[in-house]
Length: 319
Image (cartoon, rainbow, N blue to C red):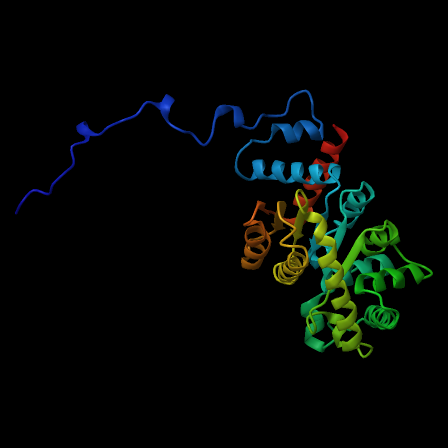
């Protein structure tokens, strides 16, 4: 039996460390807490590598968009609203950072319930057993009546919800409603329904015609609002794995169809608890292939979005 062949390591070529490209240097390392315990010091103490570096780039892009009068479009899933992020989005609207809010139907329902009743997010499993899941009378009737009025008046779905909330005589927390505050601050707010996917579609007051027309009007409004992304705008997709990435891709192609291939040269970022196919492809990758940059930040909304908001406010206040 022959002896297996071995390579001769004494003949291996080596290179000096000084001439080797490195991905990480000591100057990029995190620093521990020192005398300055401010939030700005915390941000500066983050390591300048991987997602911490991407986080800084996203913050910088948003700040530059605000200062350059470019659009910042924030797209929302329902979980973002029901984890208490609404007040932070309102703050960014008040500061002139967010120029448009687009959300799926779930986000609109949670926002409506928080504003009107001060509570939301039922026990799905318990309600499913006896057929009461999603059957709240006031929520279903209030929103569907709003859509019906909006259909007749030529309003979009977001506008219809905002007007309905504004007309309520005794809201529990109007200051927490992203939809209502967006309307009051003249920030575009659109709602993008998925028929049969939302609890209010099973209510006796539901009108497919009203839901379809008001939501389609909002699709057209979103397509118009993203024209302002060109050359420096930002799109954030927060917590929507399917609806908003799909809606955004179609609205973007409409905008480009009507504007000679624009908008281009903008930044996109998907922020969610886990990675999904559609946000990665339809938000992060495809829209930025012709210029711009796309990022993914993975983490729980109740942690990531406060960090992002505080970082934006810190940056705006420092320059």
